[in-house]
Each structure stands twice: as structure tokens, then as C-alpha cells.
Amino acid sequence: GPSGGAGGLLGYAVLGGTSTLRIADSDATGHVIGDYTGGLVGYLYAYDADTITLDRVHASGNVSGGYTSAGGLVGSGILANGGTLAVNQAYATGHVTGTYNVGGLIGMVYAGGQVRMDVAYAAGNVTGTQTGAGGLVGAVTLVGTGGAALDLANAYAVGAVSGNDGVGGLV
Image (tube, rainbow, N blue to C red; front, side, top):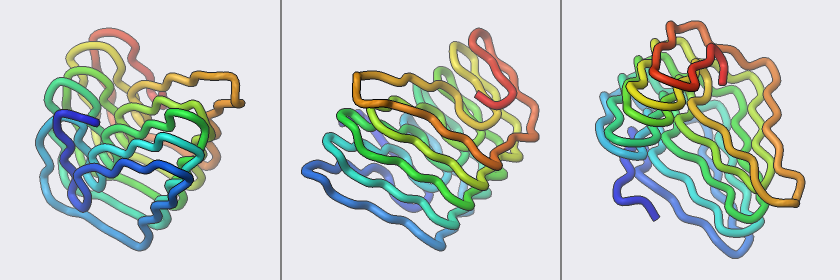
């Protein structure tokens, strides 16, 4: 697990054994500070074919990440061995700053499974001082032989993005 994990609603969650985590109709507004930091959830880790769903969730506070993984909504989402992370009708409007893996919506995605975002956007400015800064997602790594994929539909980012290396308007 992480050495930290800070979120406006949930610091971190670790799932295993085909578990399910669903967060729906939730909103966070405070300023969140730390490593593995998100406006709503700091750190999500699924060991197995677990399902994580975020439906109709929003975060409006600023996020100040430390060394790694800061996102306007989720700091870090990891699917180690398959599984699904679904983000539906979600947005973040706060400004996000950090060192590595800084994103307007999600700081870092590391997936051996399916990551789907539908009707998702980020409106805050994103500032990363090292590698991985994106308007929507700071860094994406797809791994394994199980059909890992990132599927973005109706997703966008409108804030300014700045960083040192690996900088993108969306990812």
C-alpha cells in the first residue's frame, strides 16, 4: 500500500478477492494535501478482478500533492491483475499541483484491467514539477496480457497544464 493517501472523502482503499467498491452521488469541497492525493479519493488499489465504480462524483477543492500522484478527483488508481475502474459523470474543478503524476481528474492510472471514463472532465489548472502532467490524467501505464485498456468517452479538460516532462492537454 501507499505510505500515505489523502482524499476529501476517502484516503485509500485496498480491494482483493473480486471485491466491489462503489462511490456514488458524492461531493468533496476541501483543500487536500499529501502524497497519493485526490480531491475525492487518494489511493485506490485492486489486487484481483475487483470492480471500482465512481458514479456522479465531484470535487471542487484544490489538491496539493507531495512527491507522487495528485489528481483533482483521484490521486492514484491501480488495477494490479485485471478488474475494472469505471468513472461516470465525474468532474473536478480545483487546481492540482504536485511533483510526479499530476492530473486534473486522476493523477496516475496503472492498470492490468479496464479503465473507463464516460462523461468526465477537469476544469482546474494542473502544475507538475517533474514527469507526468495531464489535463485529465497525469500518467497512464497499461500492463499485463489480460487486455488492459483505457477508454475515454465524452471526456475533456479545460485548465492550463504545465510540467517538466511528459506533459499533455488530456493525458
